[in-house]
Length: 138
Image (cartoon, rainbow, N blue to C red):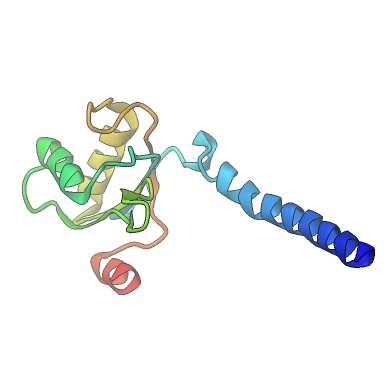
């Protein structure tokens, strides 16, 4: 019994170290330095991070419609955790042209919006283009 208890303790310590290693990149994921200062010239998609947990895709569309003319974006995705009944604090938006993406990037980087709070981060998304976003997220 004592040997198995020691093995269990050692395994739990290893598990704790492994979990700490997994968490470390997630903690660093939200650093402000992780975002480049500008978008690539041909970028059409952005990623928003640190959204309020009750923020929805409809809320994001409402915010986008306040500063962009209709038809300037073609993909909005706010991942949702169905078990916790909240979003994952992320959103992805693809725009119809790089100019619209830059406009949105500057807006989300510089403007404090009442629906968004003050801690929002904006970056260029890894996945660019409507087709690629649909293939990846849907």
